[in-house]
Every structure is written in structure tokens, then in C-alpha cells.
Amino acid sequence: MPQLEVRNLSKRFGRTVAVDDLSFAVEPGRVTGFLGPNGAGKTTTMRALLGLVKPSAGEALVEGRPAAAMREPLRTVGAALEATAFHPGRSGRNHLRVLAASAGIPSSRVEEVLEMVELSGDAGRRVKGYSLGMRQRLALAAALLGEPRILILDEPANGLDPQGMRWLRDLLREQAAGGRTVLVSSHLLSEVAQTADELIVIREGKLVAKASLEEFTSGAATETRVRCADSARLAEGLSAAGASVERDDEAALLVRGRSAAQIGELALELGIALHELTPQRSSLEERFLELTGEETVA
Amino acid sequence: MRLLRAEAMKLRTVRTTWTMLGIGLLAEALFAGLYVGLVPLDDIGPIDEVLTGTGLLMLMLLVLGVLTITTEFRHGTAGATFLAEPRRRPVMAAKLGAVLLTGVFAGLAYVAVNGGLALPLFESREGSLPPSGDIVSVYAGVVASFALLGAFGLGVGAIVRNQVGAIIAAFAFFFVLSTLPELLPGDVGDYFPAQAVGSLHGLPEEGLTQVGGGLVLAAWSAGLLLLGTLLIQRRDLNE
Image 1 (tube, rainbow over the protein chains, first blue to last red):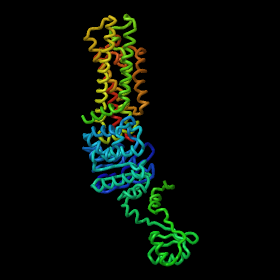
Image 2 (cartoon, rainbow over the protein chains, first blue to last red):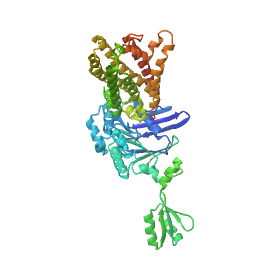
Image 3 (cartoon, one colour):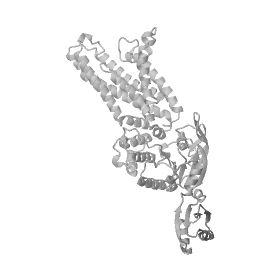
Image 4 (cartoon, each protein chain N blue to C red):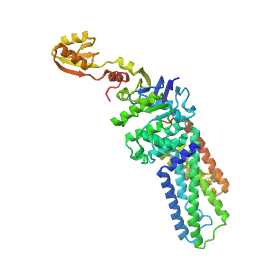
């Protein structure tokens, strides 16, 4: 059974359609990336799954039932929705203690999760003084509090430094490896490409793609731009080696199906001097932008 | 019970609560000293001196009741709260429990300051205190009014949700409305919230009995809470 499922979910706010007849299922044991540009309906979908927002039509289910029917909510699903959702005057530790108290979780677990997100030293300070990265980690700590079977994280990478990003990736991988369900949203493909096994892409509230990362990537090989002393002969050689070669402007070639290193080695073999060897923006990113209709690279 | 603990902890773990109650009590003590200590004895009414300084504390409880729910929306903690307990009615019940407890706590603190400062000061000026039974019943009324005002504020906050709007609404409902009864015929005015608080405090000039005043105030709070809870149950939580 899918751990998270939306069936024909629609949500309107007044005249705005935030989610439009969206259906997908999220399976346990892997990290599912939930992608789309800002305003695509990711947050609304997640809030509907958590029972915070009521669907205008369709269903949003956790373990086959609406969130409101959960017996032990924090042990079932942990969520980090917004890094700003804290009372500024309450300390990080007390924020977690309040949640622990309402779910009957011992306060020793609060110290454990604080340790996990490396916030123990600052837990006594009021959230007011926290950086965005610290707030993100506090939000994650809250999500992990009940050792939930499902994690729903909305843009958890916002405000994290590269070290924090890496830590987050490891954490998500570890959770998924332990058989848990992980749904993590982002408006940047690069943030989830290294972590996600599965991608769900939405745009204007509608599903535009659902595929495993491999499937998603296979349709999008990387391109390399090559200029050399004898492009005709190199093109011939590359084609013979199974690469697809296109002529770009002037004397440049666009090569797919071979990495820059492989092209360089072939050129050496053929004795052709290379003038330029530039891997183009990954077509994976291009494909994502094409799907989501984003004009600019964020 | 878990939820009540969590809600009480929410109030306990922010400075605002303590600052507001502290200022309320300080004002009570100050007022008791000035009024009971300096005003000519003849001008102090039989019950007035007992009640010296409830005003600001009443405001504080009303506002604390409002804040109990509006801060959840203002700071976006509602998501976390209703994730830990997706059923919204029990959460509201726990919030009610927490504000009632806060009201009783504040009421007892008020009684301590009043009994420890205002009464001795009054006696030291050789004023004659009302029978101790009367004092006890006034004190009971004050404690009950603090608790019910917190509930009143919670109800308004659940309906209005926007923090500033809710505080203004609660004040308007309570104080602006209280000037109307003089213009109204008969004893309709006795059933307005501010007048009911007066009766509950045992002020002689108010129309209802003490218990009657308490019941009327409780009815106002219950009505607001029912409507507020209904709205909290139905509305989306996008904050």
C-alpha cells in the first residue's frame, strides 16, 4: 500500500486553483522528490496530505486514510512545513517539549533529536535569535520527534549551507534506507537530484511527470560542445564510436552520448588538437525547466 | 490531559505571559497602596477597597485568552499543533483548560496581593472591613471572572484569528458595548459582559446576583467558544 496518496485532489482558494486534479502515490523505502516552481501547489498538496487544508475535491491519504483519522499522529507522520513557524519568544527546546507533551513523547527524546540536528548547544536560546539554517534544523527535529514512518518536508534545504545540505541528504537517505517514506519538496532540481530515487513534478497544480530518477535522466543525456582542428574527422570518429553528433555554429560540434573525457581521449587517439571542450548545462536541468515552464535558471 | 499539559506549557514558556501577569499584579499593588492608603476613608465604598486594582489584570487575562489561539496563526505554529493532534476540537478544549487554569492562577495571585496589602492597609487606617464571608465571596467572584475572561478572549481569538484584530474586537465587545446599557430600557443591560463581570464581583450597583453574573459571563464565553471552535474546525490552516 502506498504510504501517501492523493487521488484527483483539487484545491481552490477563492478563484485561484492551487491544485488541479492531482493524483500520485508515494512508496516507502525511498526518497521521493516533489518538484515544481514556486506557486505550483506543492505546499498546498502537502498541507492537504497532513489534513491542514481540506480538499475542494478528491482525497489526500496517509496510510490509506485521511490524516484526521491517524491514531498516533506524530509517530505516523513527521512534517517540517516552514522554517519560520515558531513562536519567536520560545526556546527551541521548549518548542519541541510542547510538541512532545501533546503526543506523549518523553522529553529525553527531545534531547535526542536536538543532538541529531546538532542544535543542543543553542536549544535554550529563544528562536528569535536563530538563523534560517538553525530554524530549518529545528523544524527537522520536530519532524523526527515521534520517529515517524513517514516524513513530509517542504523545502527543507532552504537556508542550509553546503555542509547542512550534505547532512540533510545523508539523513534522508538513512531514513529511506530504514524503510521509511520520505517526501521532500523543492523548486530546485539540483537540490533533490542527488538524493531522490523518485521524482514527482507538478506545474500549476497539475502533474507533469512522475518517474524514477534513472528514467528521468535517461531521456536527457549530457551534451558537450567541441571545437577542434578537424571537426569533420572527429565527427566521423565519434559517430563510429556510437555518439550522436550535431553541427553547431561555425566549426563547433555538439556531442551526445559520450562524456567530455571520452571525447578528449578519442581526439588524442586520432591526433586531432582540441580547441574547446565544454560540457553544456545538463539536459536534466533543461528537461526539468521545460516541464515546469520556468524561463530562468534559479 | 496530554494536550492540556502542552497548552499550559505553551503559556508558561513565553515571557509575554509572565510579563503581562507581572504588570497586572504590580499595577494592583500600586493601586492598592495609593487608593487604600491615601483616599479619604469615607470615600472608599464597602466593597471597592476589596476589589482595588482588578482592572488591568482583567485586561491581561482577556488578552492572554486571545493570544492563546492567535499566536498559533501569527507565528505559524498552528500547523505543528494540529499535526500533533489533527482533531481540532480536543485542541480547543485543551486551550480552554489552559486559559481557565491561568485565570485561576492569576486570580489567586490577585487575592494574595489584595489580602496581603490592601486589606491590612485599610485596617491600619482603622477602616471597618465587611464580614469575612463577603470578602471570600468577592474573592471567589474575582477568580471566576479572570478565568471566564480568558475563555472569552479565546473565543474571540478563534473567531477573528488575526492577532491585532482579535484584541481590538475583544476590547470593543467588552468595553464599547458596556456603555450601551445606559441607553437601553429595562434591565437588558445587566446581561452585557462588562455588567455581568460587575455583578460577579459583587458590586452592589449592578443588577444581577453574583451567581447570575457568573452564569451570564459564562454564557457569553461559551457562545463565543462554540462559534470559534466551529470555525477552527472548518477553516483551512494555511499559516
